[in-house]
Amino acid sequence: MQYCLFIYGTLMDLEIHEILFGKTFPIKPAVLEDYMICHHDDFDYFFLRPAPGAKTQGGYVEIGEQELRKIDLWEGREEYERTTIKIQTKHGVQFAQAYIGLMDGKPLPEKYIGKYSKRTRKMQQLDLMEWRKEQKKIQP
Image 1: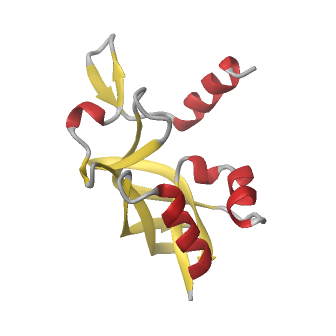
Image 2 (image 1 turned 180 degrees about the vertical axis):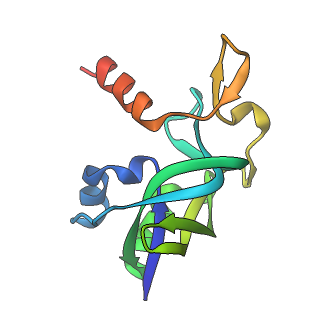
Image 3 (image 1 turned 45 degrees about the vertical axis):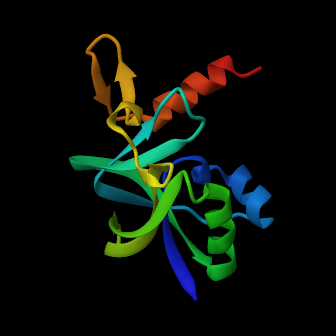
């Protein structure tokens, strides 16, 4: 059986595909509406969380059941819940699997959601490209 998986964080990295599967999968562009991608300094990974009106740019891959089981192990049961969502693709609306952020098996508390802006004192949606640029600056 083939699965459509919406990806938005580390799974967008083809090197991670190589590590997990020994091969890469073509990533096709997709948009997830009413969710936002978040990152918090306490964690080293990204989260999706419901956010009415938000649009998250990401991608999707088509994978088999064996690959999906590997990703389930990679993402972990305490950090994420895999659920079915609708994504917008160039071919229209499509159902996909996605990993939504959890903490201790429950939806994330508000303090762990988003990127905190000291200037505005508000949680803001993370700009994934901006984050990647910053990470490249600080890595040796």
